[in-house]
Image (cartoon, rainbow, N blue to C red; front, side, top):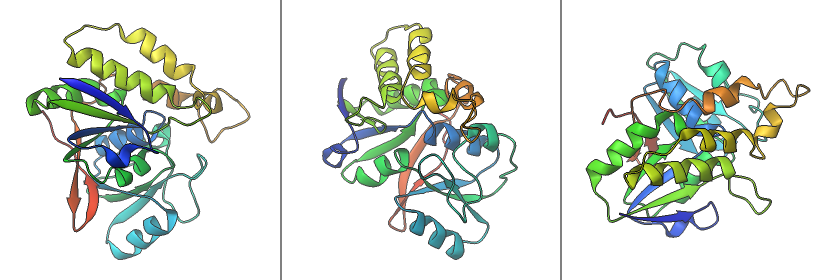
Length: 228
């Protein structure tokens, strides 16, 4: 098995099995939403798309962020601290974020796609093994020119180590999440909209035993859960 790494600028060319990673916080939050009973999650690129979806689809909720903050009209944000308290039983969710959902929408040539974060690490790796791909492409959605995104890169490298049959110590990877650029918002007590507890949830490796495959539904990408 071979491995490739890409980001939001280059993921359009990714083919084969594509794993779109967002640790802080989109696909951690998505996993928590599923754990609270959400039926399916539709990732979109813009706030306008999310609000339009919400008006068109019964029993749907909009979640996500712009600049880390939920936009007006959204039902909840991108914080697993908040999401873990919600009852989302049977809900359809439309999600818009600045990194994670963009990676899904832009990876237009993927043959098979998974949304992933550390909280579903083992399930994701187990599922990838069953697919037996020749190569895996990781989309590091937080990777920007200003050195942001190391939390997503750490997650991808952890996955790669597991897929290579290694038994990596998770501690250094978790440490990289806490030391990443985006973690700084959560370590600032003057920014209550970025709770420090989110980092604890984002680094709870294998909190859930499902994988999050992305399929197309009526031309839209949709995330559901699958137990490998």
